[in-house]
Amino acid sequence: MDKYDCLKLENQLCFPLYACSKEIVRKYTPFLNALDLTYTQYIALMVLWEKKETTVSELGRCLYLDSGTLTPLLKKLESKGLLTRKRSAEDERTVIVTVTDAGMALREKALEIPPQVGSCVRLSKEDAEELYRLCYQILGTISE
Amino acid sequence: MDKYDCLKLENQLCFPLYACSKEIVRKYTPFLNALDLTYTQYIALMVLWEKKETTVSELGRCLYLDSGTLTPLLKKLESKGLLTRKRSAEDERTVIVTVTDAGMALREKALEIPPQVGSCVRLSKEDAEELYRLCYQILGTISE
DNA sequence: TATATTTAAATTGTAAACAATCAAATTTTG
DNA sequence: CAAAATTTGATTGTTTACAATTTAAATATA
Image 1: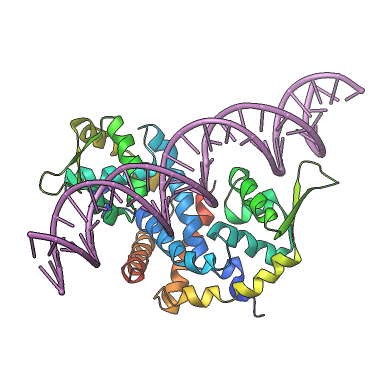
Image 2 (image 1 turned 180 degrees about the horizontal axis):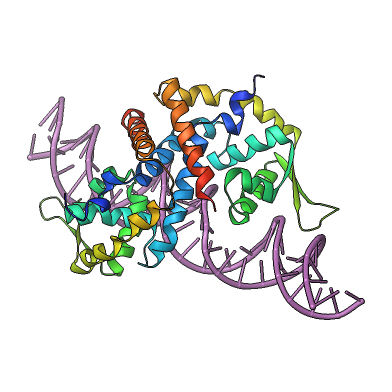
């Protein structure tokens, strides 16, 4: 018990979150490769599959990402024909992102992914719910 | 309740982990900037502050990172004079990484970081311990 | 109305992060 | 011992991720 204990890796809360996030995303990779998607592209499509249409800033709020990350990512998805990007007529500053038929079609293939990944992460229903709750509790209080 | 529920962002376990990890790392950034360190450099130094000496592969196992990430990062820390890298005499394949006096000196300044970040993340002691436990449970079962 | 401020997205530069591949050293095996 | 397999770290290429800056448009204020 010395004064440097707080700098030990094993006493960090952030590190297991960071490592865990990376390792789970890595589990997605082979399944996402089959759809020619990265993890970030996948979660961006999740939002579009539900909303059909959104803006860059709204997408950024949903995903905790900024335009520096989203702009090239959305251009990539546009080049694949999964979505379209066009300026709003009412407000020329905003870019409206709309999922295409091809983008919606990919949703069918994506249905396989959650069960495949789920079987990789061994966690009881209660533990999964608790983890979910704790993460959102942090997300809700951290941004001020 | 339709068949696409499993593709909703709000029903993902991975996404809150991913977002939470990013947001907490972001909280570290201003404090780490004061030490001219990135988060990954910081956790690499954490290992070195304890071990004084290690190898690239051992460091990779501790941090869940590979040589593609660590080699440039360690070269950067070497160029700052915080550590040295040299091939092992017994096994020329392995690179021995050793923290320097300047690297150890940085530990003193780093002592300020955990309390500063801790005050940003509002979580009870019990919740923090539960989150810690759940992450390590996943990390322990995910790699097979 | 003119000016200042705020907002939205894009751009630039730096640093992860990792898959895939490579080269060299070591270990295993036949 | 010699060939094959494994291990270690480096390299290459692609994609995040984000701070900081820029440009243009919209809104607020004087």
